[in-house]
Length: 240
Image (tube, rainbow, N blue to C red; front, side, top):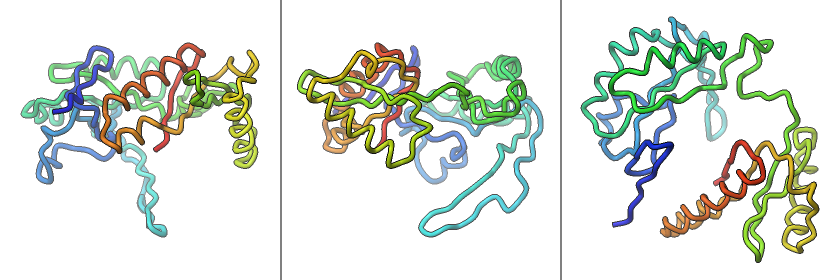
């Protein structure tokens, strides 16, 4: 049997399958065996009561749907009392997702939910930061320099597109094509390889995994991450 176990900062998971926080609760045990998951991730909670967005919250579109729920929450105390204990019946570690409006509030809420039965905390940074004009924590006012992981005969390299947020989709496509060609031809400059803030990769790991070679997939993902870290990248994002 293939070993799918992973280690995330010392947290051992038997496999890397974790549900998205907003789509999962213990009630799903009536639908499938929750022991199959690598970890359980709760819906995001806030310190106090939160109603969420007014209805309608869901809109059907062609072949899909849009939703704007607004992170409703019953508060931290009710969460610790009522939500965490039922998860003790399953073996996968429990990850608690939290949301707050300031860094200090995040720290305070993290302390509150760090109780027995909680293995890790997910920080939801899509919420407004009241100390930065209400912008989401995930929004960085600095330039977005997009790194592109490119496979070459000598291995993976991570050249970058400066100020990628200022380019159109067509401009991004042209810049990506130019970088890929120059990377494979060995014509990259030092500037091409510096200053990335985000790296994206057309995921060979995903394609390999679909073919069944999990160990190769993990190795490719590890290589991309190592290259990205060496290039000073703070986040790695794979497409499917």
